[in-house]
Length: 189
Image 1 (cartoon, rainbow, N blue to C red):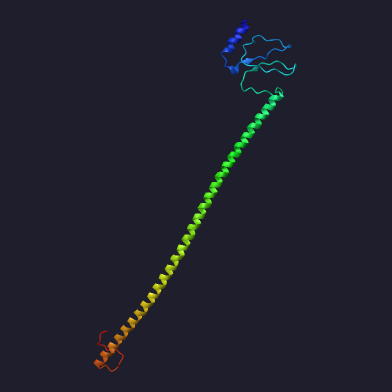
Image 2: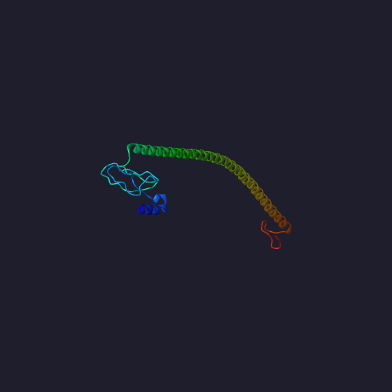
């Protein structure tokens, strides 16, 4: 009785996860002292008569070995695993669809942007050709005007030279110079 009280007093200070549970007694196994109906959780029973009765820790996350599992538990776990895998697969498929939709939107936006830039480039090319034609027309007009001005300058220069030469002839004749066409020394040019 004193052993039982000291055992219960020692386990009362421990959290529930650290308390040990003893399996319920079988016909060939003697019940141990301290085991009773005050147990908080059911213990796992060994399947075979030759297995020793061991004290199992009380743990909510306790994993049972493959030998101890029943076919129903295995089937249930397999179904849970299949459901988890199916859910995971469905989530991945949804993620893939979202990514594909994003990519389609991006591709459409990119195609639209490329088309707009292409139109803009074509419009700029047409505008550039028009400007080049206008510049060529201006260049032709300037070249023509320059040609006309050169002709007028040459004509004016020729007229000036002729007038000057004619004036010098007239002065020589009036001066009495013997050699026509040669300027006299006293004339200022």
